[in-house]
Length: 120
Image (cartoon, rainbow, N blue to C red; front, side):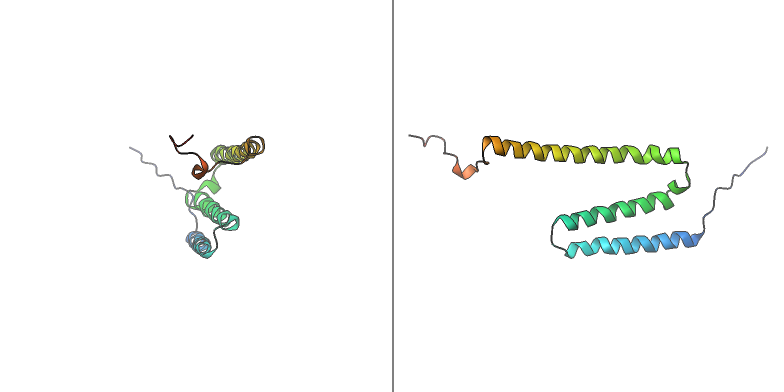
């Protein structure tokens, strides 16, 4: 009986320590955004930090960096297309909302509506 043991690709431990430190720094930047005013810049920074951290984790710790390019495209393109389509739907919804305001007038608040049974 022959038992074969395949040796996988070994990566230096220093690489993992560097990435761990880099993730720590990026996380500190992400937590620092909690002290910013809520606005577009804050949310943009939160998303950027989130994608950077996820990219490093997937590339190094999940070894995607060492895979074939076809597999990388197969894993990364579908979520990218979904994000693109969600962005397009957001722009379309904003356009539809603004078109309704232009053609139908301003939004009516519930305080300005007559109460049932109070009309004369």
